Image 1 (cartoon, rainbow, N blue to C red):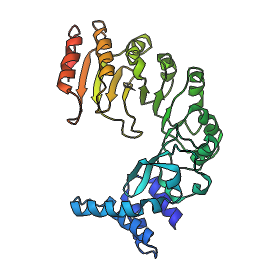
Image 2: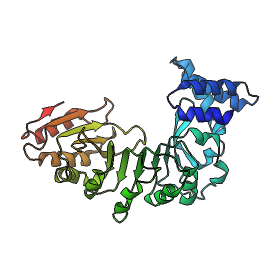
Image 3: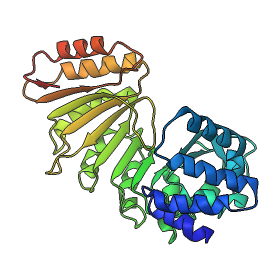
Image 4: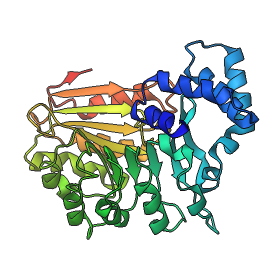
Length: 329
């Protein structure tokens, strides 16, 4: 029964029904840890929002979360775990020496609901990590070194990934896109590239992607002309102070999204709410060099919690692009 309920939860991540059935079942068990988890799931799925509920959830979590995870707690970074309505939803493999053993965690219930896994900087050997990935059937988002992709792609049991983050080196870049044709990566629609170069744009245009995130702070200014040199032509830039929600990258990113004709002509520059003054200066400089007619729309989106002067930043950008005939949002 437990396995069937966990599979139902994983297959319907937005449906609270299976979660509440599982919560009821847990609360009928004899062990305190199970009952506590059942109560926590029920509270996490509740539509009520009040201080008493929040306090009780925190109490249950602080006392029992490691027990709910069992051996999984030893191989994941406690600072980089995310929970969704009572279950582990995302985590990063731990970076610690000596590294813990993955073997005791294989098959643990905590992995069954995991959707997001980051393992690019772990000290755990990659053969152990790739084995874990291939046995974690409900993964949707993955951040690993490119050398792990070959092993994952060759596995008949690999999960069907829809969001992939990878840091290919220059010599590996030409090998990356053929790997995306493997069955487990064929469904990738969101691709994060770390350290990639503008030369990959022709390959990107051949893939059925809906979003590309490029984190290359040192060369961010080179991507704007690269778009114009490719088949796509840049027409819209959005300057967004936010964090990508699923893999939650930090720092500054370029986010490309195609239009209905599959042209990569919309670009978002995203950064965290923290100060990135040097990188923002590079963007302003690059925007100021765009020729007349190369851009038709410029948008600003930012949270009130941004730890820099957003109004001054906007004024500086508008001054830099004053020679362009733009629609401003």
